Image (cartoon, rainbow, N blue to C red):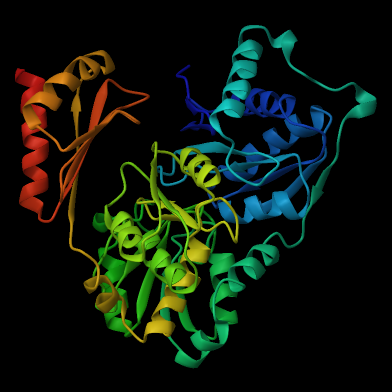
Length: 452
């Protein structure tokens, strides 16, 4: 049997070949063995494989001697809020994020309501490997100590309340904006509907039934959203919001139906936050320079983390950040929860529009223009490590960082090379003021690594 893709924050894989109920049970038991006392929450996105996989995981939770509080379908950030409000020991969100329908997975939350950091996740992985080699090492409870599975009736309201507390709801209501949301049959439609009702918006939700029967490939990127863009223009909507299946990422379409890119989502949220408060900002090292530009404009500290939500959150906590996020459409507002959050993003972008009286295209037009190119090439991690000195000497960057792979920065552009954790690949990301400049950076880097 093929091995699922396992990271410090969870796992994912193809159902039946990489991810089976047996794998899920062992992983959930390993997770429970690392937690302090208390119940464990269980939730899922809308994938058709979610219910039976949740049944297997719930059996592992109660068999580990813990109560299982079942949220059923809920957005990933709602799970983080629920951990806090229900004072749970942790949570498992059953989701494969933007992967195709054949996939599912498990995302782990700690008692603080955030995706587990690397140290904790490594403990879970070590326990899972131990149980894998010796099933007798699993931490099953005696019969008198097994838990119970309980349904939580409304896991959404606490999250909604926190989001609404970050915006001027009355100002948004006065605008009476017309909003299109593409939930694409994922978990986001339930709370998106409540949010837009609370904000007095006229709205339409595409794919509002969370049954996992995606209308288009689930990642909210340009090539998957052409039909949604056409719906924005045909319907005269002020903005289009496109969620991924577990609703922690958001892409934005402007009033003309144009895809403005996931990189803009946290930036627009930060623009609104900077109108209200000042404080440090954090993004990962693969995100656009736009956040750093905002930090310079408002004279606040700016920090970069390694790629990965848990790493961004670690950096935010270290520097007491006002706001953070990842350029993959994942803003993180500590006032709500330290989890990427499409619901907060929708509310705060509408709040920005109401506060400024500007359209999405006008707001984007006020930001520095960049082009970002993403590419990859076959190369072992060892060869990448050996290539770093060559890249430094030949490309003559103003600064070089090895925080995560190698990142080379110049005054108005940058190049990042990171080894894949699962394949002998190097991922290349370049950003420059225009597409030609970004493509040239990637071309030169690939040529150097291939030819020396």
